[in-house]
Image 1 (tube, rainbow over the protein chains, first blue to last red):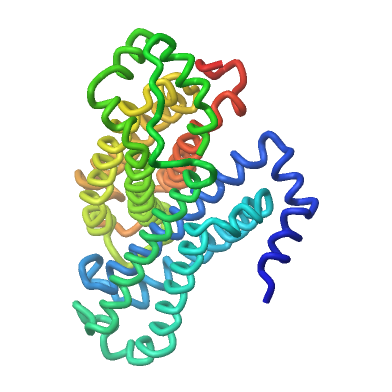
Image 2 (image 1 turned 120 degrees about the vertical axis):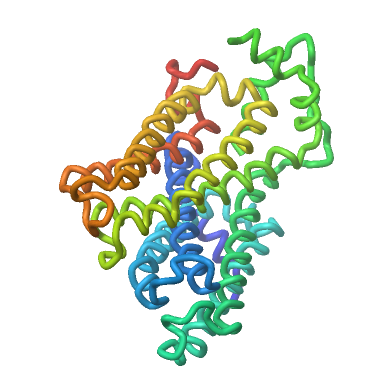
Length: 191
Length: 171
């Protein structure tokens, strides 16, 4: 599949143009992305910590996951929609951004971890639902889930700083015009 | 305020963090992961009071389970947030979003602490009971909305003048 053509199409779409031209679209969509991601992450690690066997040990795993994973999926849907919208604004720039692809790869790994857990480990859940700690295979899935999603957050934040930002370049501090130079650096601040 | 910002910008720590280009993004990463952890704990805590989570467990059990987590995350957020203010004083302290965020943060923390105290004292429907009074249920939903606004305002700091126009102190 030709991803580059797809990304070009996204960037040239009306939605992409709206994301670039609208003054308010990016801040609001970006904020929606952050809120979605932390709802996803927060509800998921609560389930994962029960799976590892360190939290809510007196409750069954299925009860905790049934009550909370719906919020994880709501967060995921919000993050996916807002993420796609942000992608359309500069899709071809994201295409050449390594960190972006690392992030996508890490999300795929987190998905594979979840699929393996749901399709294999969950088959025996009736044996360990109320047990704490659960079997090692289940606990490993919990540790991997928390680690991979933490990495996704780190990589996501890093993308904002890799679009035309050089970490090796020292930030000039103009001591005579400090306030001016800091405010003028608004482009950097908006990462 | 501007004198204070200038003084803080010239402090050794501010210059040290600022001159390492990767430091601010890295601190922000930890800040967001801590926000995620706090969101998880607050989601469960508020859902429980709203009567939408762990209906079989007493309020005291659920509240106690997430007490350390909630305040631990808030301390971590204050530390990383403090470093971000030191690193970029003008960006934070001249932002209307920042001060609106701090105001809501104060209100949000007071609501959480008052819930926790009431559940600890365990009078009436609180404590051993599994459901909170109707008024508290509504406040729990409102409380979570306040925390979402706190996060949104945190993100808005990056576009303060764009969003607030002349309300921004940087404008």
